[in-house]
Length: 275
Ligand code: SAM
Image (tube, rainbow, N blue to C red; front, side, top):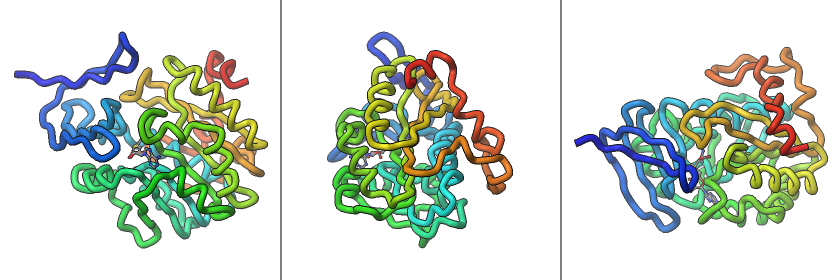
């Protein structure tokens, strides 16, 4: 009998994938965690019924969280990832020689454990000596670390369950204070088709805290609607001022020096949301 997994992206719309194997089906302390094998996208991590990552398209999201901010900051020595327990953003950060330490703070140790086991191509840099992995609430962590980081990346689940307070003005204020005086932060901010309100409220809140705010996009086939946004808040450096020639060659499949500028050109209806 064929097995199919469906993520209900709204009350009346979803995406569905044929499953060939289920590796994990577990309620952790924080969320429902499923690790499944799909025919089209390979191994897929699902949290609370939402696709977090798949082996086939993960590179888009992870590269686009990490590289725009790291190539905007001239000296990103200390980097924090909030969430991101699958390790994909850390893998991308490790491609930057200027980064001396990257701290990953995920609330759920089970995501880290199962990602190492079932997603080795994504979690492969979690044991790098430049990386420190902490199991804790990211909200607590940023409030306990003032003036510490050059770049903070928020690779969280959607604003439900443990991540609900990671989409609040108080969190962005905490991030501002956890950054050094020229710090940059970036967060995944969902999609403009089904979550326009969220993008607008995040944009409004981040603009109240950071002087420079830019939104960029990427195409991610397994995320709701396929069109994903990221919001960057910066104290000093503008990602739009970065020139192609300033961007070093690194091994990527989506991000490139040419794409850096292009990603900030939004479709008109998205541009209107964040004006
Ligand atoms: N790329 C995904 C997406 O946008 O669908 C998200 C990746 S997933 C690895 C996000 C991680 O955020 C999960 O491992 C979850 O445990 C973690 N997380 C959720 N709330 C958190 C919190 N308050 N503090 C730290 N990590 C949190």
